[in-house]
Image (tube, rainbow, N blue to C red):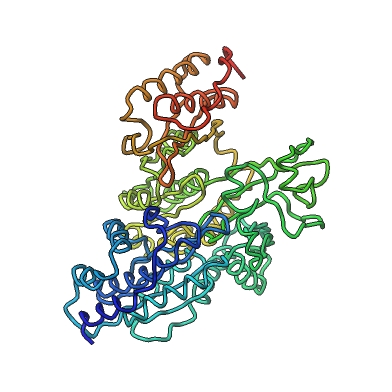
Length: 593
């Protein structure tokens, strides 16, 4: 069958698959992400499009991942993974949306126009995976229908974390194993590669004298399944130095619990410990060392609970039921945390690399760079530039921007504050470490990194190895610097597109009067503290709704709250706010504390 005939067949069979809401379709870093019912009709077209891109790229394997990451259970999403294991080429993002809007009777013509292949007998290969959401299997079935229409080979992985799907696509293409319809056990390959390397590295660390106990909040997502495999592997190791995982929030089949009052996003935003389901009544033996991941395991946050005697608010009482587990005992609400977020992970890795490179070679010319967004706490930026003398660059929000900028360094570290990120290595680094002893810490660090995408599980191993090599506890890690108080608010506006920002999103170019007003508010705060010049605030339009995100940092919580509230009011007044106006704050007291 010629490609032309194949495209005509697709057009014929596509009738009946309607996209319910074309107006809300926008393909970005996360692919399409919508209420799950709105993705019907989208999934089948993405299956078709994945096959087209595979054929265009000489039938290298593409990936389709069905997930909505940290979003609530009612949402879902679907995205493409390029053959290198990375995100879809940004040039293809508008092409994807254009195909979704293509009328059914023009599909064959559209596919022909976007096809680069001149050979007919080409079999596209697609790796298909999904998370634990109730809607995911049905969307996977629909995506597979699109693959079948294109006579593609579908390698259905089933339940998988998003980083695993990226890793699998990279592994398949790197090892040239797409010529067979039967793939090896990729799940086992993934676990064995990282677990074996971590175990050997820990065994060779003189600074590590005992096993490491780590509690992990799995957010009731697919990450639990993978972490359970790592736990089994580590439990089989006969050594006095092991990573012992204690897993919580692992009810994968209770779909309604996914990311609910738990997970990396919840802990980051609320600064609360996660709710444990079912309640953990027994004492937690190692209560001070926690990691939390999100529903598809691409975000990682560490935290230490901070016990405070207090009365739960009515809102918190609804979440924690007045105290019903070891993290939230009655009368003592331990919802406060010392947060070790993406900023601190970046700083930890940069500190490690600076120190290791000095021990390996004092005259190396390898560059280290950290990529941040405007949401990174300024204290972390100062630590990197002033204490470590490391280059820092600020880019727009979105992993694709961070990933691209990180490629400009030999060691390119990027983490969003939400805990999503990884480390990239240049060819120069890979050649350099190849000549090092297999147990050299720099070589170990490279081996433990999933460079294809931010991977919460691989990042756990990388963090734990780094801490063990430094002989640090979470207390040592937290003491690297002190975060400035920060606050985020949201203002609803009539048209988010009316607000234009600079490339790094730290300033507004339109409306100009809003930026002038924000600058004046910042000066007013700084004046109260002797014009030290630490305060900052910015606004940026939301990428998904008619709203503006407000971010503020200052010397104290009171000053930060005042600055955030003031900027919210200014944004409402000068950028077309709708609905109730934000409350104007009381005048800022001089030298507030």
